[in-house]
Length: 109
Ligand code: 5GP
Ligand code: ZN
Image 1 (cartoon, rainbow, N blue to C red):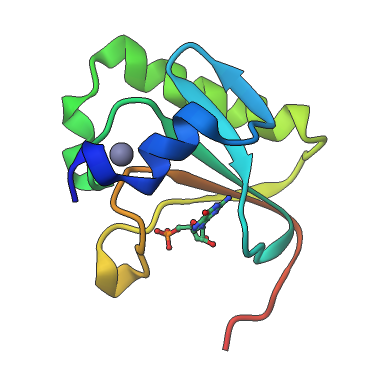
Image 2 (cartoon, helix red, strand yellow):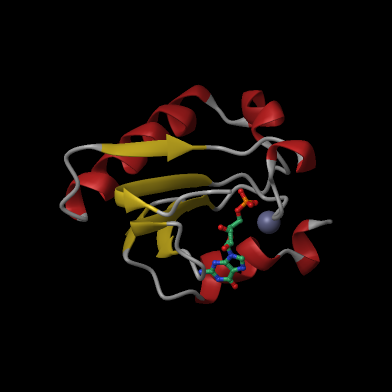
């Protein structure tokens, strides 16, 4: 999928953001797997975490800070940060994103 028809490029532009910073937004997952389930979406379109080296170092650092800041702003102290890399690992949207999961998680069968 290219950036032109990418769902997360669209949600970056138009979504209902719970947090935003230069180059990054956070949204609520449409199908939450935990009490709090947020998605951090970078503006830069890369398909998977495998290509994370395409981020300039300062942008990669700011992305990590934004993940932690978004969790803090959501009132989370303890939480999981998850990145699914490739379809076999459960990735369904091919624009890099970070899951933040806080509170009780839904049991996955
Ligand atoms: P992945 O499975 O690729 O790691 O994560 C994709 C996530 O995007 C899933 O948790 C799915 O529920 C969420 N998702 C898919 N479509 C939409 C949407 O249109 N809006 C929002 N907010 N989340 C979505
Ligand atoms: Zn995209």
